[in-house]
Length: 261
Length: 333
Ligand SMILES: Nc1ncnc2c1ncn2[C@@H]1O[C@H](COP(=O)(O)OP(=O)(O)O)[C@@H](O)[C@H]1O
Ligand SMILES: [Mg+2]
Image 1 (cartoon, helix red, strand yellow):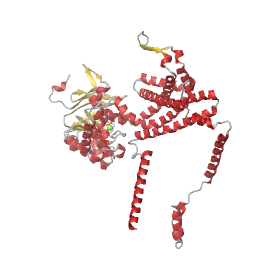
Image 2: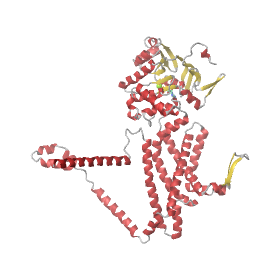
Image 3: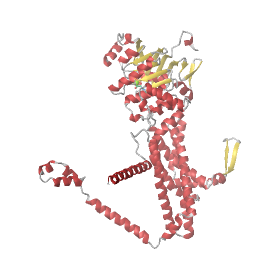
Image 4: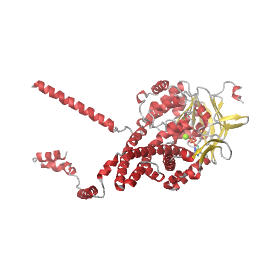
């Protein structure tokens, strides 16, 4: 059953032939990807190519129609019964998601909670940590993203860049093994992008495994261990940033890179 | 402000050029509204006349009103009215949340059941529902808790023992209101950004936890104002329970007036109490709206209590300042 155990150290994330359709629209046409522990994978591709959908399949925000996704050797969202996979109960899916942090393009902070309350909510309510511990850890995380002085503010009182950094801290508070970023800087004013990218760069340096959907080619070139170019629901090419970004092999990749650079 | 500008104008007769150049004189003359004064005078005269006619009406005994305003039966009726309103709204809100969640669920059976409930309870008159619950004992002599279509029974009791007039009224009002309130709750739930639900799920929160801690608190902001309205309606609808002899405020007044024949006086007593109660209801609403408005306004306005305290502290510092300057001037003298 656990085939990865045989062929050496298993990757943290492994996607095998992932397929997903919305109605008649086949959005993911068999994605195969591996992300090793502590590595950063940047996912590039034109709008509508299925990047967000793939990311959302990883933590089962979307149901896959075929294929398998393993995170740390665990099949996401399903229980295997021989050949067949049966979807898990909502409580079990929720438990699986706790080890995967996600950062959204539109921040999605809880507007009725302050920055610190946003961070503390899941550790206290879901992971059953003590309030005092969670708050101490929350303040540490706020310090890490440079927002200690904003702990008591509501999201509406923060700039976009500050909201996104709180959102990153909120995801980190659950001590995830893996962080997913879906265009984290696309909704930001240009002068605020740098702060968020710096936080992500530090996070990568600290050894966090990350999958980042982004249009920031400079960031991908500098931080990524692996760059994947997706188009129309398939992986067109993947490899080291120097190969894919500086020396693309496929016309579609070249056209895309020309358009964003 | 106006005086100042006019006086500066007058004070500088040597510079007429300045006056015409300044735009202040023109802007300072407000538009006059003589029509408003006429309308207000007429309305005030009409109201005063009507109040006076009530006061001088020989058919109204004002002392009777005063006598009964705090009569023991009336006060008990008021308390029961308040209890009925509170309990029915609690029942209605609980049911409404359940119905709204069912209506938004992916399960078609739950959706249809919720829809059918709303269809039935909104589609028949409240008065009919009240009478129905009041006469439940005629329909079912005993109430039995057990498994349908089997002979297994856990408990059984006489209907009229369990469904007292109070319980019948509570069920009638609460279940009817739930049908309306469920639409209010549904609108509130739909008003919450779906991105928030996804963020909650991505943090490993279960659907139930997400509803309780993330979605409902945000929905409250949209739910509370119309629910305030519904509570006021409910308070007044409790008077309909006179039909099934629940001894609430209006029933008590009707029983008293049936004995002493002071119908008008007792209606005034009841109306006065209903007005007081509906006015008082706006206070908890204000505080609830404040509580659930957190994070939406950039800064919350002060509560009347906070404003009063600030005024007191301001007056106090003023007084101490004056006292201090007095002391220094005395010292100088
Ligand atoms: N919930 C949905 N329902 C129907 N179609 C969807 C849904 N989400 C995404 N799609 C479609 O899937 C395709 C891929 O979308 P997405 O993964 O968001 O692309 P990307 O993130 O690369 O821009 C698009 O054609 C989009 O219209
Ligand atoms: Mg996208």
